[in-house]
Image 1: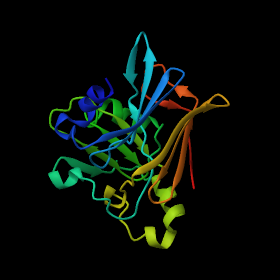
Image 2: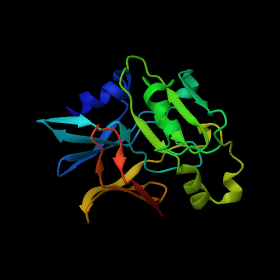
Image 3: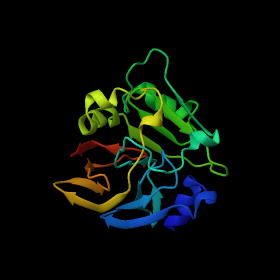
Image 4: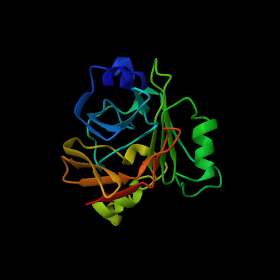
Length: 214
């Protein structure tokens, strides 16, 4: 079931290029950790169990950031991805009406979309008609913290060439003090913890999300 559902959003042409690392279910939410086949693909997908079925949550998670090439495929090199900025918007906020309008009715309404702090990434994959959304509006600040302000400022801020993903090596999904906690350690020695209180009623977004990285 998991591979079939994820192939619909990742692309059957990539089905042999990604692997499930771990699946953990807590209460009615299931976290699927994977090594993705290309950049700007979540390495954690969430499913909510209701009415006897698992339904994929629209918002996927991306754990880890690396300041050099990981070797994973970049869809920009295939001519099927674009990065753009919104006119008169200097900083993107994931929960802002402008961003939610873009996700739900704009150019990205039928495509996977990643929201960065200063730009938007959208791509297409042959045969894929489903989509996901990734919130990376906090990635730039994390990069400054992890790699140093002087080093990171050399990278462009309007395109995703500066953001690549490391591999996951230690993974967990827990429910502590009324919060779901997704945690992962990367092969470049980062420890990420993303927590949320629940999934919204439309099965789209994580509620009260918090991110901690060290």
